[in-house]
Every structure is written in C-alpha cells, then in structure tokens.
Image 1 (cartoon, rainbow, N blue to C red):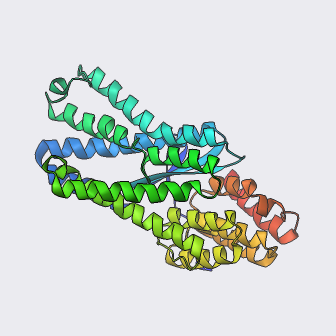
Image 2 (image 1 turned 120 degrees about the vertical axis):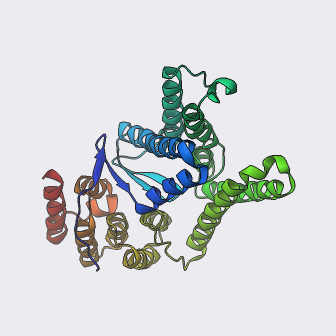
Image 3 (image 1 turned 45 degrees about the vertical axis):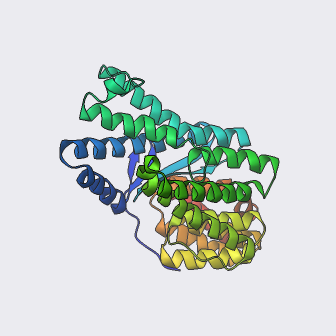
Length: 330
C-alpha cells in the first residue's frame, strides 16, 4: 500500500482546510480575466466568500454531530463531513442549505457596513468593491440554491427524493439535472441574453456528466477512479451502501494508487471489515494513518464506522485503532 508523509494542514475555526494549487490558479485567472483593480476585488471576494460558504456547511455539520474538513480546488470547493451518528434527512438538508445561507448573510452584512443597499443595483454598482462583493457573495450564493446537481439546491432535492424513493432518488435527481442543464446550454447558444451563462452552464454540465457516469458505473460495475480523493471516497461509500464490497475494495485500491488519501483508505477499511477480512482492514487502517493530515477526523471516522467497530475487539484491529486515537490526541 503506498504511503505518504503527514504534513501540517491549515485549520480555520477548528476545521482542517486544504487550499490546493488549483484554487490559487483559479483565483489568479479571475484576477487576470477582469483585470485591474476590479479583477483584484473579484478575485479576493470570490476567495473569501467561497471559504465562508464552505465554513457554513462545516459549522452546520459539526452542530449536527459530524466531523468536517474543507478542500478548495480549481473551480470547486468541498466541505466533506463524516457523521458520528446517523443523520436524518432533515439534518442533511440543513447542512446543504448552510453554505449559501452563510455566504449571502455575510455578504449582506459586509455591504450594509459599507453603506450599500444589496437590493438596489444602482447602489451596488457605485464601486468596484461593492459590485465584486455583491456578485461573489449574494448572486453566487443564490445561484447555488438552484435545484440542480451538484449545487446546494440540488443536494436538498436529492435528499428529499432519496428519502421518498430510497436508492433511486439521487439517481432520479442526477438524470433530471443533466436534462435541464443540457436544455439550458442549448438556450445559451440560441439566445443572446443568456450567452453570458454559457461557460458556467458548460462547466455545470461537465460536472454532472462526470457524476452521471460515476453513478451509472457504480450501478453497472467497472467504475474507474477520478483521481479526486473526495469524489473517489464517495464512490467507494456508495458501493458499500449497496453491498458491493468487493468492487468497493477494487475501486479504492485503484483510487488510492492514483491519489493516496486517508478518506479512501478509511472507506476501503470499512469494505474489508464488512467482509470479515481482518488483515485487509488492518492494512487499510495503517494506510489511512500513514496518509492522514488530520488524525482527529480519521479517528472520528473510524469510531463512526459500524463495520470497523464490529471487529474492533480483534487484537490487530484494536492495536491500529489505538494508534490512530493516540495520534489524534497529540
């Protein structure tokens, strides 16, 4: 099993936060695209309010008994959370809505402090700073509530559908999102008024296409890793949820080779534990410990795993779990 050396990770409000080079490149491109002082204001506002958005998710997750971490990447950001107890569908909705809510509220407060009325476009357009904050905080926050995957609004509707139609709701929402976004992309080509939304809608469709293929492959078999740890660990988790443990282990092994990450190793440990494979579970837990940059979150994840807890009395499992707990306490 490949390993990497642990390295310090930035913590914001207690949440492990990873700012990847792609995020810095993306903000730099925004600055260059808008140019001058406006570019600096848009880039800075986008960076700050993206972080506030993810902090909103993370704080809500922690309030509902989860451990959370944040990852900022090129044109994407995630607040990944691991429940320490079962979450209700209502709690998941609260967590999904918290990001945009925090973003819009924070933007409104900042604009009000600047003497700007966020509901009056003429007031907003008085300065580059207020215009950049308005777009980055309020407009993007509201756009995120559109009921399409992978936006927060889509997560809300997916959660409701999954509650009403277990194992099918998420798949239904994903297919609907692809259909609606495809139609909107077509409209941006034939309607001048919507032309400015073409880049965003194409990017949205690309993400949906990836998710659609992943979900389809999960259902059909032979899914291939994306090389993005958060997405790959979620795919492994889906495979575990539908009882396809052997495929989950195969996928995790390939994903871990592409991008060694403790979240992938932890899901693999769950899958091997579900099969009663003590040696495999211990091996994956050691891999998780070797690659983790946040032992506390890893320890919570181990303790929240029913599969691992069920075999935790085994001496070898007990030993590595204790090592993880020791690292988490340091």
